[in-house]
Length: 170
Image (cartoon, rainbow, N blue to C red; front, side, top):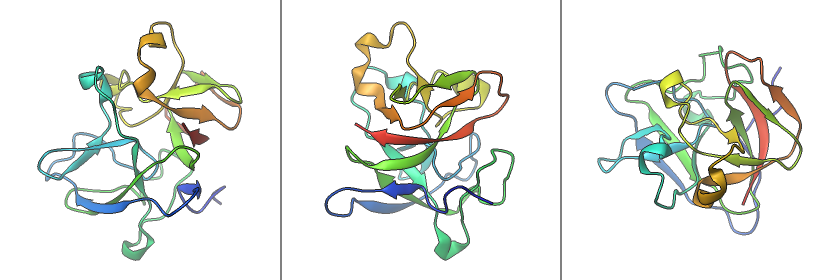
């Protein structure tokens, strides 16, 4: 049973912008609700690879579950039932400061309560694009890549796949 049945756990103020986009014909990798995504110039959605453009501000956009087309929320990375596939309509949400979301923490990461979480894209080669990472040396100059902070302790240091993490956006 899932810990949460939605990606947006709490939002503040007026409801944020929720937009639907189509995925490309051939997905470069997995696209799951809760992943950080980028919207390409042709309107397609791909997992966030912000390391490619690490010197520009990065909007915090996540893929969310779309129950109207049968997409729910998975707690296990290996559960592919709710993955978006080629030509699915992907519902995305631009996260605002204070929003609480259920995201993915990359393998090899350990997050303490309050740890900064980054969208760095450094796990792209490992197939974990769109997953968040904890602070590492050299991130001091990359404040624009901060997604937010962890709301819970999660130890995925020995993990071989991403795990869920509750995060509060900055």
